[in-house]
Amino acid sequence: MSRKHLFDTTDGLVLKGLRGVVAYNPSLSLIESTRVVYDSTHDRSKVSIISGGGAGHEPAWSGYTGRNLLAASASGDIFASPSTKQVLSAIEAVPSDKGTILCVGNYTGNHPPRSPFYGVASSMLLTQYS
Image (cartoon, rainbow, N blue to C red; front, top):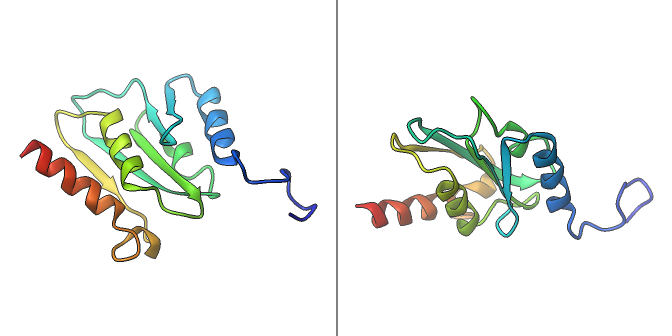
């Protein structure tokens, strides 16, 4: 890497950033294994709004998570969409009696056929609860 970067390697960089966001806001929690930041005070009687995307755009997604904002966010690798497993983890972290809205950014990597992760995750949950 060039000397213009703060870190010599990207190894562990995404988790370091997410830990920092969570450390700053005591109402947020982090599922490290899936890199999901969620509002631990989310009221399940309200609709859960979930989004996510590639890391490297901070404060996007994790920075928009919290009271009156996103209920959860899934962070993919640097400039890469989150996986189906990550999206499912975000949905399961903030259950809602009123429903869940998945906000998918207008990035071609988030949409089929390049990255069907949001669609596959929502289809899996619809099948599970039908």
